[in-house]
Length: 426
Figure (cartoon, one colour):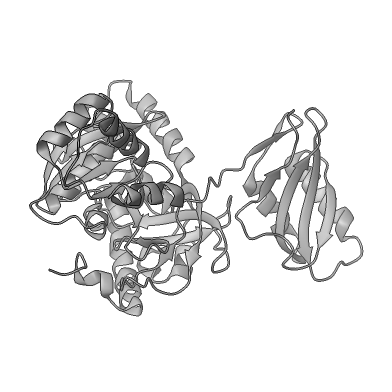
């Protein structure tokens, strides 16, 4: 039996890139035709000409916060009595190309924001992650993701079915019953959060009940640090993690190499400077932006709000797709200063006004009620008048005053931070 889910995982990187980019114009055209909101996002773009990553930069990034706003506004407009089919389209804010019937299920995320699940096998794309975690056909998977409102339970169940595995829908809570069911059924592995499996295993120990056969797990939904990985290993469970979202499905997954997360095959990932649509330098931390090739929910240059970075080289496990370092925090660093919100996009606006400027960071200091803004920026030279001109731009764009601090090129950390809050709240 192959150690890879399919041959795409070992495809030559140049071939994979050429394949994705050759399919991209058709994907965008189909998205614009089937999803009205995507059509508006792509309105000014020659879709047939989008054949490279550079061409993608002409398309504006559309972020999760904007998706929620679009859904809320669309549903409010539709409450006036639109026909059922039209209202179903408005539920998803015009971003879905399918409606009731073609959508087998609909789920809710906080907001509320709604996501469809179509009838396509492994709709969310997690089968590849399950396979990399060691799951194989005709095994029993104990699924402890929620089946209520959110898609997490269905994400793992549809992936398990794609592998011809059987699923026990454990869901969340009822720890003693979970222990008893695990002891009775002897599942081969677990899907859910790492913290809940740890609770189940510790409860089993206190009840003096063995859980034979439970040797592997695929985790998602929360952090999986090395300390927790070590704990599970010491207790006989090889746990791996997958990174995804209710909007995009599975984005990247861990392999036995334990070196970053390998990207899923059916997407294009970019790392951009927070608050912008512009790519960062290779290896630099920035916001994860994904173009999905999902024909039912075709999100284009979708800003997840998560921070990560691309890793160089290929995974030692033999998979050739790009790797990322995993979830590294949130990109939305919007901060309130003296009663005014300052956004990462405003920092980029300021930087772009002055061609002499390199990397920039807005640092907020001082005790509560005594906010001080310092605009730190890398420059190779300081023309006469630049400091005053920069101070004027800051005041015009943010409506606030800031001290300007010039630093040497490379002096600012490449950690994805555009706004750094150093205030004391004691």
